Amino acid sequence: MIRLIYHYVFYTKKQRVFILLLCLIILFLSLLIYDNAPFYEQQLYKDLENIYYHQSTQRLYLWFLPFLYEMILMDHDQPFMKPFDVYFGKDYVLASKIVFYVCVLIWVTWIFMISYHLIPYILTDYYEIYLIYELFFINLFLDGLLLLIITFLLVRLKYQAFSFMIPIFYMLYSFVLEDIQHPMLYLLFPIFLPLESFKSIEFFYKICYIFTGFTLLFIQNLKNKH
Amino acid sequence: MAPLIKLEKAKKRYLDHAFDLTIEKKDFISISGQNGTGKTTLIQMLLGFIEPDEGMISKKKLKIGYLPERINLPLFIKVFQYLETLARIKKSELDQELLMMFNLPLFQSVHTLSKGNQQKLAIVSTFLGTPDLIILDEPLSGLDVKTCHIFKDYLKKRRDEGLSILISTHQPELFKDLCSRHIIL
Image (cartoon, rainbow over all chains, first blue to last red; front, side, top):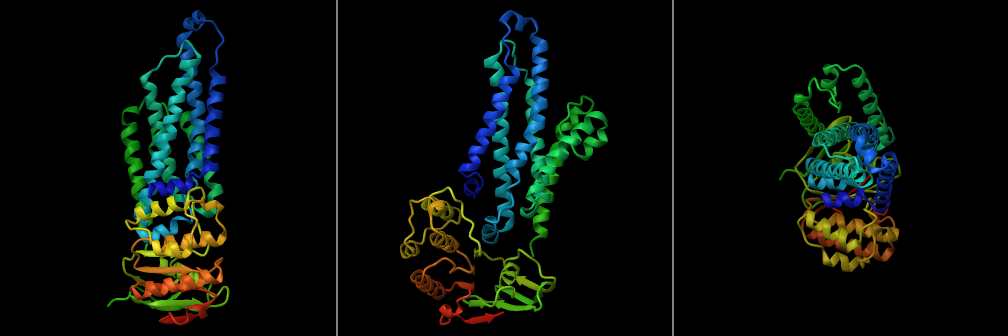
């Protein structure tokens, strides 16, 4: 089933758009970090350079990736699913769709993670891998799952164009969360924010939130049956 | 034996009549009528895509093979690859007889097929697997006369095997001798 969804959703033209987008982000990242300074100078400002790279690239990813995720997810409600819905049952089709999109999100996040490390490793002399930054990508992937749940709950084929409101809302919410660092806001919608104050419960809460979201999806699916 | 699907005074607000319909095992029902009389609405209610505003639907847990009015096929895949994948998912084998009868170009990509051939492919994929009921919405659109007759013979064979079939068509006379019931809306 997943293979069939793949053939429907990622047809050749769309594949090309994604590859082009990936190339663009890699090019942009290369331009952003390319440093012509000599080796000893890069070593001298190593820590500063690393902080600059991580902060600016993470900001870029935080703005760009939700839109890319949404671009992938917005096609979830397609008429081709209808014959499968009535043959296999809606729950089976929904579960297959979720597995498919989760795999795609993992794949996209992985590609961005690799380019995040590989490009500065090749192009600069100062770059060092800090394992703490891997948390950023796990968070980003979990944010992708949040977007998946919201998209599956709210976006239908008729209102596909409105789906871009979701990453815009995500961005605005992250600005608000950054300005008003209140845990209550995080509890309402747990998107990524490097807040030290409640980091220990962050993952646990977010995962519970996501599972509640998936349960809601199946309840909504159940409601549509009769 | 309990019916597969039963509609009792099922009505949508935008239609001026209610539907009463019972589909039993081995039934062959054809539906025809002018545009806008609710053929597709009736099918959508039977499939559970829309709920009636009044009346009720009772339905067994069924595997339904559904051919929509507008065909939706993955475009950038070879015909054989598509059918093979579908057969694997539906845990069945390809119906060689239907493939031979329709003479589909198996190694061509779906997007290069003509409308008629795409319709044939959609029909083959609808009959794949082990459906309890087949619902066909305008299956003849895009098919030439010869293929229509081949398709009719195939439907007759499947009906005789015990499959329940509901067909919405503008050419009801073609299926006149097959129908256990004919509904005009």
